[in-house]
Length: 458
Image (tube, rainbow, N blue to C red; front, side, top):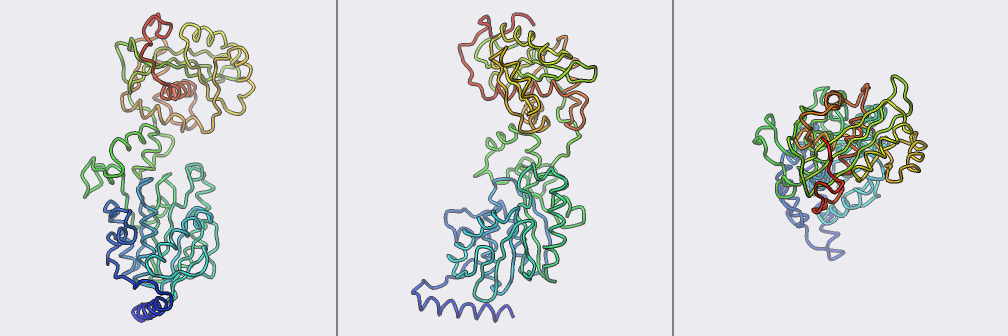
């Protein structure tokens, strides 16, 4: 049946080209990897996604159900688009579907996808939501929550990025909505013999790939940097070294350890585990060419079980961060004001507090008394905000003094921090704010000991 449909398709294309003067259809490469640069010369042959291409090719021969995790910004969606066009060239009578996290994004993908199909000689018709080819085949484009009723899938269902972002992926309600939609809307449309490929960047242990893997689906993970268990690749081997080199990956990891393991390594870590590893120490502080900042976290009240007010001083030179001083008192924000003024007067530097919406009143009061205080809107929770400094800490770039009166309580809190029901996290938040300020501060090479920048006491 497929051979007759393909033959009829070729006859119709030749007739259309005779009428319009369009060029003759070309013989495209048989394999998907070679098809990508043949159809789009500006793209290189995506050998780093060879195993994804193999899944598409297998779907033309046998029923395939596979989950594939691919790092962020590694060309996944481009290969999917070319794969759907390649599939229709192989089997122009098949009815397929492309699903992503929203209908709007599906339609944004549909436009360039139709252009690729047209360039390949398929003469797509229909709409952005469902475009057809001569021979009876089609691609239905929709989002999670969208309609598929009445749209049979006897070819391939591709689910590409069903989770929009971390906020959605970390919501149990949203994750359940994605799974319920797959179970009740998508799965019933898949005919016997048809294939399903779920391909997305990982966000959470219980995202769609995590759920399907737990049910026994075939899974494939392509980490940006291979680990010990990623054969046939060698440990440390980059997935796409020509376009995503080590330096680029290092910058992504430095930005957030939490995101690194999920978005780039395909191994999302659940909250509740320790974020900071063993501490590391310094014996001497830099004497010139450094940046300096204070991180602040202020409490509401001075009750026994209330949060503490904290001010932490941090220096940065090169890639290293030096924790110089931590002042911590179980008092409310107004009572801590004198401590803030004294620390800032002795060592003038940026003074940063990531305050939540409920802390706006306290922030305004403090700023009237101490205009140097910078209050940043806390748009993410403390666990996410701590990712950058945790990555630097675990890479041995955050250093502590060997002796200090505040050292024991500081290490205890930081190394016990999990982001889930921690008894205390104020010093972690102050450390994250100071790290954020220092990282984004230009180092003045003229800064030297004795100009009010470095401490007069240890």
